[in-house]
Amino acid sequence: MDFYLNENNLISDLANILENLKEIKEIYDFAKEKNCKIYIKDNLEYEDLAISPQIGMALGLLKHCSIIETDGYDMLEINQIQPSIDNYYFIELMSLCYKYNNSRIVSLTNESEINDIKYTISYDNDIRAITNIIGKSKFEVYLQLNPVPQKINEVFKKAELEFEHIKFTDKAYKTANSRSEIYKQVGFSKLLNIFRTLEVLIYPFLKGELKGFTQASIEEEFKRLTNGIEFSNESDKTMKKYGEQRTVIFNGKTLVMSYHIKVSDNRIYFIYNKKDNCIYIGHSGQHLNVAG
Image (cartoon, rainbow, N blue to C red):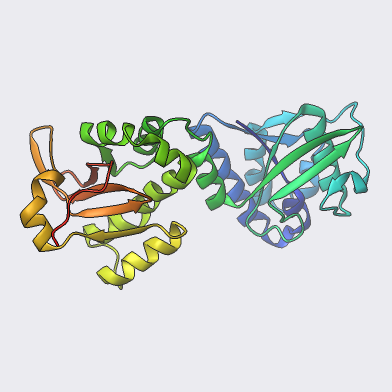
C-alpha cells in the first residue's frame, strides 16, 4: 500500500518541526516494516525548513521517502474536492492523488486544518474517495486492519502475525471455520479490532502490568474499545460441569479456558499462559453448555 504524506502541518508549524519530523520518521519506519511506502512531493523545499543545523539533519529522513512527481498535472478546483479547504498544499495533494490514482494520505497528529477522515474528488464525471489517516497511532491501526481478510482463518493468521502475544490453537481454527458466516456478518475488521484489544488491554491486565483496573472495570473498558463486544469469565459451577468443553491440548499443554468473548452467537475462549507469556485462543465456535 502507498500513502501520500500531507506536508501541511510540517510546513505551517515550524515551532514544532522537530516533533513533526520525529512522527514522520515513526510513520515511515512502521510503513517500511509492513512493506508499504510513504510518498512526498518532489517540489518540497527542504532549504526553507532548515532553520537550524539540528533541523537540517533531521530533514534528511525525508530523502528516504518515495517521490511524487509534480510535473504535468492538472490542478483541481476547490469546489471539486469535498469537504473543500482553501489550502494550496491540500489542493495540490488531492490533484496528485487523482492523477496517480492514489486513495490514501497520512497526516500528522497535530494537523488542525486537513482533519476530515474522508475526502471526495469529483472531476470530469469521475468520483474518487480519499482516506485521510491522521497520526501515527491511527496509521498503525490502519495497517493492522487493512487489507481486510476475506475468510475467518485469514483473520486469525493476520492477528497472530500482528499481535505478538496472541496464539491460535488448532481448535480455534476448526471451531471458527464452522461458524464463518456469523463472523462475516459481524465483520472481519471488527474481529481484528477485538484481537487488537486483547493485545493492548487484556494481555497486560492478565499479566499484572495494568494497574487500576478490576475485573468489572476491565470488562467495561473492553466493551468500550470494541464497540459493544463483551467478554467475561465462566462461573465455577459451569467450569466444574462443562470444563472439558473448554479444554484444549496444544503443544503438549492442557489449557482450560474460562475467559470468553461474546461475538454474536459465537464464543471465543482464551487463557493467559504465564510461562509462554501469551494469550492462547481455544474454542471459537458455537455457544457452549453452561450450568443452570
